Image 1 (cartoon, rainbow, N blue to C red):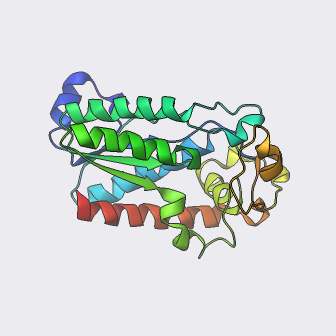
Image 2: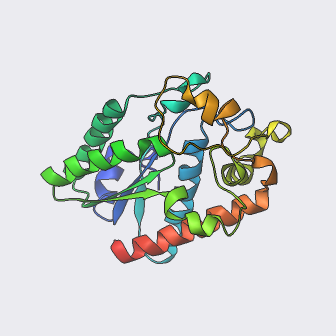
Length: 237
């Protein structure tokens, strides 16, 4: 069930019945010329819905919280439409959201992250709340934690690449400009921090070749990832 669709009375009754609250977190940023700016939220939101359905079939209820849309995206801030939030601002904001859920008596909070730049701020925010509240926070970075499974479906993995493009073709094909799906894999032997480094590492906002993407691959990714997460949570909730 979606938290934003409840009244406060319904929320008060439901929160005592659910095993956890699931918080999707993503970013608004460039994803090549072919994917929408909200890709990193659309993916965890869709996975959240599938996880909820699978857990419900097992008799486990969870509450899906409204997503946190804006994330830390320094590297891709060179492209129009990327709304970059400083890492410390994101850490403090997420910390306050997590704290509120803890104070609403949720003992388990699942963060489903869809964006790489968020990882360290999310860890730090979770640690702060866990130090001061009796709560267990489970952080899932879906494309990292299930990389092995994804690479059995796709030949490569990368920003706006084959895996993400496939997932978006499965979620919202009308938002994918397939005729503009072009890119290549780029890397650096060390981390280089420079204001315009994104132009070098993410030409046109891409770091992978998306041309092998298909809706069928995206559906397989969504299914295997949501199944793995549901199984994982079944053992933890």
